[in-house]
Amino acid sequence: MTSREIREAFLGFFKDKGHQIVPSAPVVVKNDPTLMFTNAGMNQFKELFLGEKAASYLRATDSQRCLRVSGKHNDLEEVGIDTYHHTLFEMLGNWSFGDYFKKEAIAWAWELLTEVYKLDVDRLYVTIFEGDERDGLAKDTEAYDLWKAFIAEDRILLGNKKDNFWEMGDTGPCGPCSEIHYDMRPNAERAEVAGSDLVNQDDPQVIEIWNLVFMQYNRLKSGVLESLPAKHVDTGMGFERLVRAIQGKVSNYDTDVFQPLIKFTSERSGIPYGQSEQTDIAMRVLADHVRAVSFTIADGQLPSNNKAGYVIRRILRRAVRYAYTFLGFKEPFLNELVPLLAQQFKGVFDVLIDQEAFVQKVVLEEEVSFLRTLTTGIQRFEAYAADGKQIDGDFAFELFDTYGFPIDLTELLAREKGMVVDMDGFQTALNKQKERSRAATTLDMSDWVILQDYVQTEFVGYDRLSAEAQITKYRKV
Ligand code: ATP
Ligand code: MG
Ligand code: MG
Ligand code: MG
Image 1: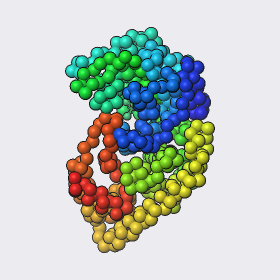
Image 2: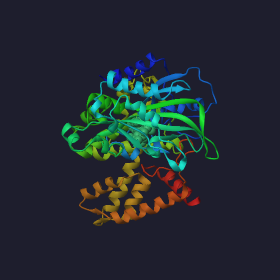
Image 3: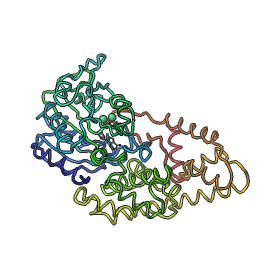
C-alpha cells in the first residue's frame, strides 16, 4: 500500500463505523494562550472534552498535522538521528464524544491493524495501565480483559502512569490509555530477545504506533478524581510509523513519505543516501524540517524573533546548518523542496499547494539571510585563525552564540586548518549559558500551560541583536 492509500483506508474504515471525517486543524494555534502548536489530534476537540461546547457529531476521525518541538512534547533533538520521531507528523485519530468506549475502540483498532493493514499478529504488543495506589487509580482490568479476546496474555504488558495515564493538565478530564507497539526486528533477533522486553525501551525497531486514551475521570482542584458522566475515546496513531510498519521498512525515512524529498536532496548534493551516517542524518533532517517549516508558514506563522515565529526560525536554521556543513550546500537549497512537498500533500493538506510560491519565497529569504550570518561568522573565524594553533573555547562559544555556528562546524573549519578547538572551554561557556537560561525559566510539564519563550535547550542560532536581547533577558529574570 502507498502512504496515500494507507491514510485513505484509515479514514474510510472509521467513516464506515459512523465517524464524521473532519479536516486537520492548522498546526499553528491562534487564540489559545496555552499552546503554540498543535501537538496532538485531540487539541481541536479540547472544548468538547471539557464540556464547553456541544459536538454536532458523536464520532469523528481525521489526520491531524502535529508539531512537537516545544513545551511538554519536544522531540527536536531526536529528529534525523533516530528514525521515528519527526518535528511535523500526521496523527491519525478516531474519537468518541460520550458515545462508544473501550470495547469498540479496542476491537476496531485490532480489526484495522490486522485485517485491513494485515500487520503481523506475532509482532504486535499492547500495554494497559497498571494502576497507581498512591493516586488512588485502579488498574485498567477492563482494557486487559477486552484485549484478551484478541491477543495472547503475555503480549499484554502493564504500563506506569508516565506511559499509560493521560491528563490534560492539573485538573480536567483524564484517564488510562492503552498503547499498541510493533516489533519490526528480523526473525533471528526476535528469537533471541522477546519483543515484550523492548517495548517502551527506545529500541528503534520496537516502536509505539498507536495510543488509545480512555477519558473516564475528571480531576478536581482538590486532586480528587470523580467519574465522568460521559466517557470519551481519543486515539492517536503516528502515520509515518504506520506506513513504515506496513511497507516493512527499517526507518520512517525509507517510506514513500520521505523518499522523494531525500532522493531530490541526494541528486542535488551529488551524495548518495546511505554513504555515511553523517550525510544521511543531514538528509533526514532536511526532509523532516522542510515539512515543519512549510506547513507552519502556510498555516500563518512567519519566522520571526519571538515565540512561535522564533521556534520555526530555529528549525529552519537547523536545516540550513546541516545542509551547509554536511551536504555542501553553500547556496540556498531548502526552499527547492517546497514544490515537491506541496505536490505530495495535494488533496490531503491543500493549504500548502495553495500558497506554494509564497512559502517558497519566505523560506528562500530566510535561507539567504542566515547564510549571510554564517558567512560573516566564517570571516570572523578566518581572522581569528590566522595566528594560532588552538581555537579558544570562549571564541568557539561566541561563534555558536552569536553566529549560530554549531560546534561541529567550528571543529570542521579548525580541522581544515590543522587546528584544534578547546572543547572543555567551549563546554564551560555553554554550561554557564545553560545555567542562566535555567534560572530564567520554569518549565511546567503539562499540556496546556503557557509556554515560555525560551524553554528550549537546543540552540539553533540567531543574529547578534536577538542573541544579546536574549542574554539580557536571562540576566534580568
Ligand atoms: P513516543 O513514546 O514514541 O515518543 P508518545 O507516547 O510521545 O510517542 P503519543 O503522545 O502517545 O506519543 O502520540 C500518539 C502517537 O503519535 C504515538 O503512538 C506515535 O505513533 C506518534 N508520535 C508521537 N510523537 C511522534 C513524533 N515526534 N514523530 C512521529 N510520530 C510521533
Ligand atoms: Mg514522545
Ligand atoms: Mg510513548
Ligand atoms: Mg504514547
